Length: 337
Image (cartoon, rainbow, N blue to C red):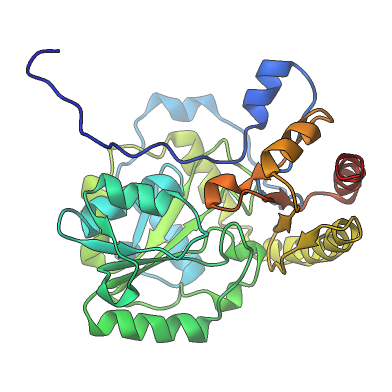
């Protein structure tokens, strides 16, 4: 088109797991999706979709919902933002906190949306953490499953604060790991903490994320976020889910037991599982992950190819129920002979 040009070197879309629906629609076959790391033992939420709530716009300030979140985590509603999944909040945060002439730091391998969102804002990645305006930290990390302690993160926060930067701490999986290591109780103008209901309540179709930060930062995020981005069904489910946060302790206990079993079974096949604290395991396969993923798909099993994380011989597998985990191990044993 004359007079119109696209941005050169526009970044590529990030690869994600959770392709079960697409594969089901494509193959019309039953799929076991180990590429999506959601809670296999979520609390039971006594909630049903009431179509009558669709007759009104949501309250775009989501004040009542923020009050509920604040009661659960002992934070003021002015310190809370909500969004259509955690990724929307990563995008909006980056637009607000970064931009041209700003620098960000990520420590790979980690979730690819931090770098993409920062790049879309116009910011530049720096390999030197001391030069970063924003430091992105995923805790527990995706895809490795490693968990940093609250003590270590507070030490990092002090260093980042001293140079007037911001620590962005993504705790999307911490409710399935160890919430005692969370930074969610810390109110600091140099800290933003991201959370999600998707993983811990196993509701990827709802799309609900929330975050905690300084009121001035939160106000700017809420202004930048598209209006009514949390739909009425997601808002209603989230409101009820926050009544059941304590029940996630049972999920953590069962996940830990299954993770130990699954790690041992996979290691026995001659593969190597990285130590994990959460509901997914990084597996070194000693072969090209793409080929192994293709073989597993022939058994109706999806796993996460970690090539996009810069780990072309690794896969990430979710911890699911014992019966499902046994099916995965059996398929893996056939594929790695």
